[in-house]
Length: 484
Image 1 (tube, rainbow, N blue to C red):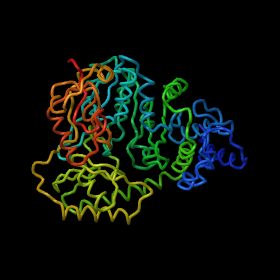
Image 2 (image 1 turned 45 degrees about the vertical axis):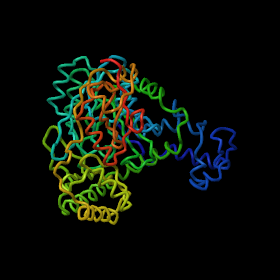
Image 3 (image 1 turned 90 degrees about the vertical axis):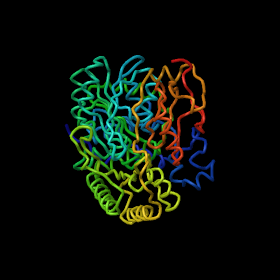
Image 4 (image 1 turned 30 degrees about the vertical axis):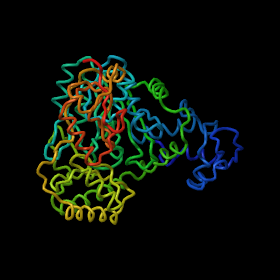
């Protein structure tokens, strides 16, 4: 098949033509190219406001693209090696939910790891599908959950031959990759579809010596968060599908939840970023990998910190590792990852991606440089020197396997009562409790509340984690089912 001209940017080209045409706007948005909102224009700039426009003949329509957006989709599909690509402007959350909603309806089973992003479980609440969790193994030294074990996936398939699909994280937030190609093969052998949450794996499609991407592994659908490592604007993503999926039906599913007023700022950023990665991704991610390795080596020289990488690979639950991820274990300095995260932000003006019980993640991209990496390394060294404590008594786990009592939809919409959180042990939770980021639920609707889980929640809350999900934002009360 002839490769497409990846230098083209159809959406950007159409927006530039629109500006040349000097159209008189009697449509939305009401700021009318910024003239109606001087303060907004002064803040964002005229260049930005001039292309914050609505769908029109020249610019196509995101819900039913037939011209420039459709052409841009074909270029994206070509760049990623997919049968089709869809532009997503409701975030990767909408791409993940569209995957699940495309393959599952009420009562259908889907096999997935429990350490999924909340968007996956949200989709189960919407459609009524039933999760079959493959509980991940834990690396107790690091306190992190690992990938999906192939034997565990095989067992889940044997026990649930009627499952419609298997969903895999590729990679996890920490950079851990499962044996994706084998899991896809197992799914297809049993007539199941393979879905991949690739929110943190855009670069797998363009870099060299990277873990395998979903499309290369033969997956049926993948959600790709271009705004994370791909360089597009926040909230912009791609949904990729393979040849087994019906593109028209998938677009119908997308249109159930995605806005009818697609932002051309987001759409053009996807178009531009796709071109940049298609033409220069190999060099970009070689540079990112080199910077991450430099920082990893320097941090490991400090002492006590452990910035981990491919040495963790074990051939199964850590089948591969994303070397662009700068994941740092902090337990040996006697501080939780969230405590180091807060110190970096509050005392050193350094904003990292997130901290949890025992780990810190610094996101490295093409926008970084050696000078800033050296500043991060120096700050970590000083934190160790000033704030180091005896690590005895530190909680060393990030994830606790839950007991699933009922499905997420049944629990979320069931009759519930709010109880003081200390009085909920043994009850069935009907809402989410999680730290964000990373957005992996500690408790999800339908799961049994245990004292161990409540202790973990209290530990994270006491150390400054942002706890989200419950109706009571202070987390003094928790909604649980009236019965069960």
